[in-house]
Length: 283
Image 1 (cartoon, helix red, strand yellow):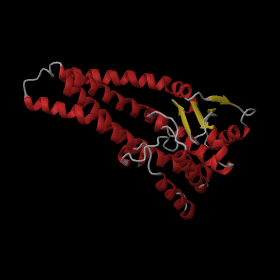
Image 2: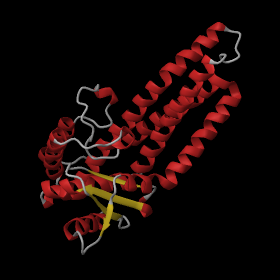
Image 3: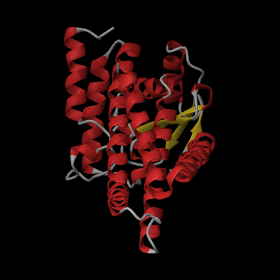
Image 4: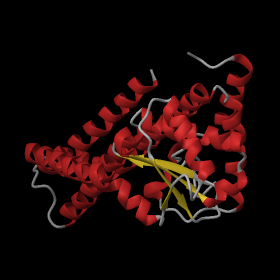
């Protein structure tokens, strides 16, 4: 059901992109918007993983350089019947982790050094299982596509505003022009809301996937509690474009409306996991 709702939201994002292109350039605008989105998605599909790993200066590790982390990933990947992903450590004191890659055969799991110091082995298993659940359900690809389409909408809306400034849209119908103006203003906001909704749904699904993989939902609940506190007292310098990738939100803006958060409330995630621990894991 979660996946169906995710694809409905993805469809809404695509429709919004096409509507914005049509409002600015008619039928040709729809075509240009779709081509723009396809090109951006292609770039994101092939290069987003290497870009984000380089951005955070992640260093690949193996069984010799980081045995606890490597063998935890190996054990859980085998249990999930996934290819062994590459494993990275980021030299950063803020405890956090993310998965990246275009598919399970080309996946990577990266953790901050602060996470390795903060969590015990049981909690580490819960966090790694969460990230492998993202890999297993292609959440990395879904998140990249959603982010790219939302970015395309923002870029096209920005160009539309300049088109309006330098002569409008070439329309005689004032009502139609006003509708296009409203769409240009509102489309980026709506795209952000849809993207955040997709991201939050996939976080809940990955928490459930981790509980099923480890048979220990309390481990992830305990790990999330520590990670949330660690990110609160020591926020990570992360850009909004990559915030959705991390297991807990690395941004420190607690005053932001929950509507625009890339993650569901940690308290709610912990509550759901503890409910699974006491009442059983849903099938």
